[in-house]
Length: 191
Image (cartoon, rainbow, N blue to C red):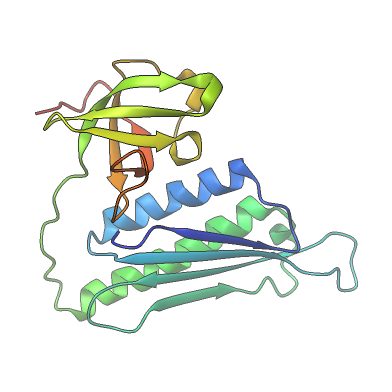
């Protein structure tokens, strides 16, 4: 993505686990359509309406070239399943995925093959300082924060772990910065 993922929480405290889940869902959307240029997600807890638990409303905006944003707002209505924020997020991203697939079909089913996400290996990891560095296949070091790790626990990462990552446009004070870092299994090979 050209613009880093933006996640906001309304009437609910932010949560690293919820942010990680949202990042995983965005990575899946990027696999559906590799030309996503931006994504914004809002998680909102609604006030209880005639029942005991709070319901969650999820708002997802996906920016793609050549069309207005793809917007999905999952108002839970009376769906008690949306008392679980994870279920509400799943449903919202499922709907966003369907809309994205519709966009691809409308474009005539022709999509450009996108490059595989960059790969590298963890070259340094500072568990007590919540960050590390990835050595890209080209030899460049890419900074990442623990909140960028998807599909694994930051504390389980070790030097040499193979990862896929996405880099934010522009650089941080530490140089290029990864917005998502996903460890890959042994079936993935690095160039």
